[in-house]
Image (tube, rainbow, N blue to C red; front, side):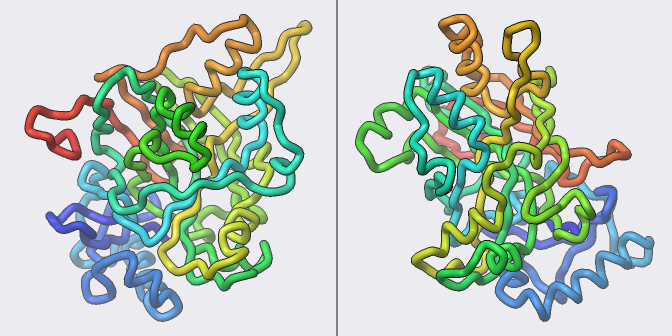
Length: 343
């Protein structure tokens, strides 16, 4: 099934069930008002939502209405935990090679992960509000999962069983703030503003054979200012699957229902053509593009995002239909009245 959260003036919004083709929706009132309620009591509430989902898909839901992605908050508008991994080692290799830094051997056996802010997520069509263009505004196209309860010390297979939903991510980064923060030795903080998620979160059964052992074998599309810059295979070069990422989280602690785990920037390896490396599938963040340019030409030629720029992130199935709906955002400055959302 597919679930979304509509804006209703509250912090947590209103849970809606969305049809498979994303054309229709129905409030889940009477079953659950918030997605967190469902995650807390998944075995009891999700079958009821599944029944409503089936009725909606067969045009038998009495109070259905047209689905509008613009009305969506993040599927889980605030979460108990947001932890973002770096599961595509190709991305790590490129970025570190560009600054002439070695990749530690442990990076190939132990996932990188940071804990981001989870109190204020962005909806799929919310503006990305940034204080200054000089901060190096970058998008990062990723996947994420929402978990149920996963006990401390769970194996990767056990952790995989704890995954409830999958969605898309724009993990906005302010690249010019990163070096000074990392130099402190405590990791990202101000360089990682509010994260955005796709209109809908999707259960694993909806993904069919494309979901295989914790990897989604579908193409993640990124379009910057209307120009397609990435057509990356989300499954092919994923070094750590989502089961491994969740297991990494719960090595020393319990992971509770409503935790969100990101994949990190989706990245594919290049191919050598006439002695020169090429990346035919493009890129899922500007930093990777700049790293490639540095390796090839000695310096980057692509700048970061400017106010007014747009970013669109989506996944389409074999029939060309969107699976999660699209993240479709605009970069804007802080408004004079200090609005936190740029509205």
